[in-house]
Length: 218
Image (tube, rainbow, N blue to C red; front, side):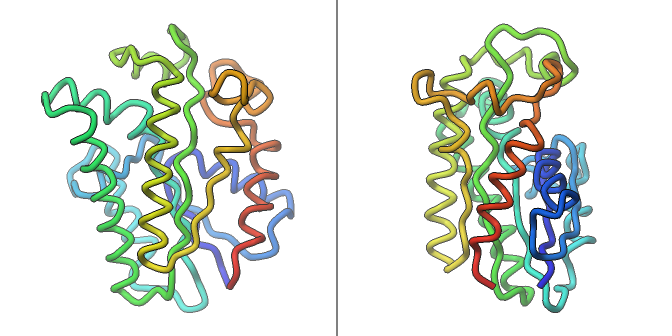
């Protein structure tokens, strides 16, 4: 059985786990930096993620299961940005993102995959007031505290867990192990050693992914 891991740039932690030999199964990776769940409804999105993922995943591969990791960009930036720009509120944008996520999962199942491994969106790491680093600069328009962005991500992941349960799909969420119980946000030890890198620490988070994926039944 091959894991077909796809999603935003945060799949790099899973790739590190695979490259380090921590995963028992073969993996193939398709990552699109900046990809969003809500963008899966838009074939003309700036990242072209929808077409890229379709090309990688369809038609269905035999003896393969997709592993889907999206939502960090939605919860950390796009939901808040669209809520202001479109004037529809955070809740409406949350629902739109989740609906697009569900539609893509359903399309994969309808195409013939026996299941899809759904994973929790990566918790945000960009600190309040951080103005350096390419990603931080792009998200500067959204002045939402890290704790609020984190809480939205946890709500999003709880909804993804329900989405997975409704479809009988496995669900993985390493978020609880990433958080500092005192601050309620990502623990410093899971941040990248590079302060300009908003991704998780590849080794420490990668080991959590390896443990979680290894527990998923065939």
